[in-house]
Amino acid sequence: MFWRLSTIALNTYREAVRARILLGMLGLALATLLYSVIIAAMSLHQEVRVLADVGAASTSLYAVLVSVLLGATSLHRELELKTVFPILTRELRRHEYLLGKYLGTLLVLAVFVALNGGGVLLLLALHSARPVGVVAGATGAMLAVLGVLLLRARQARVFVLAPWSFAFFVVAWYVAQPAGPDVQLLTASCVLTMFEVAIVTAIAVVFSSFSSPFLTATFTLAVFIVGRSADTLAHLPVGVIGARLSRAGAVLSKIVPNLHTYVPPRPLLLCEVATASLSRYLASAGLNAILYVTILLVVSCLVFRRRDFL
Image (tube, rainbow, N blue to C red; front, side, top):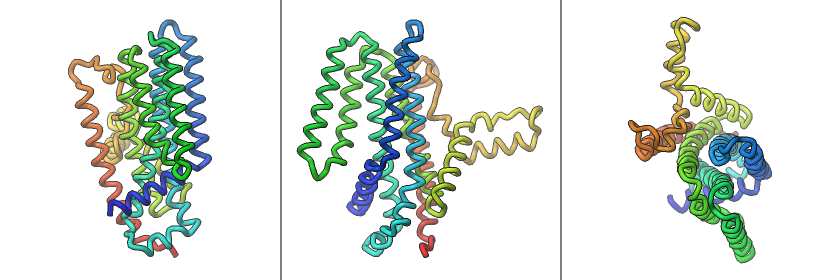
């Protein structure tokens, strides 16, 4: 089962990385990073903080958009090209195929977050006490390693990007250490972003197992918006909207995943809250994500097993 899942996951990763829309989203994310440099230059001695906040927010936003797009189109593309039929006729069960697609999409998102987060960390390093030569040397060395790997691994160039992106994030994290607590903020934000997109991708997989790409993207975005507003829905003022709508909002906030958990306030990420521990918060958020992902994937597998492709 492991080999079948890994084969489907790697094939999904290869197709997604080659998609132009993913490259466009990555270019847009990098353009946002450059724009954050302009905003930081306009601040008054708050450059590092602005870069960290804008970088964390943009990484989360673009990662969610990528998860919605990939989750809505990945399975439909296989159905449209009819490549799913010969795949399912082999010794491969439908739930294995669906889980493989999910894991492949999650790997793409991990690479996306690592590249974007690494870029933000390098910008933090440039605006900290780290010499420009050190930052430029580390960046140049990583790009040189990527170039060599791409030349040597001609048959597996697509897969080289995954381990390289994680190594790039680690190197950028080390170089950006003089930036202080903002490095911790960005690192924790990237971890929480991965938890959030894991849930959003699972939601997209549920809808894509029986719906069209447009409806899948629409429903997933709707659930995402409601999930980000779960805390607000749970405390709607009765005197303004009435008792029925207030109770309905409270019930809805309990059903949908509370995605507001994955965008905590800045003091918590900086460990400035005496009554809260960042490590415990991350562990709790991770367990919450695993629970929701498990439930959503079980539902999607049950639905996909009963789907008629004719």
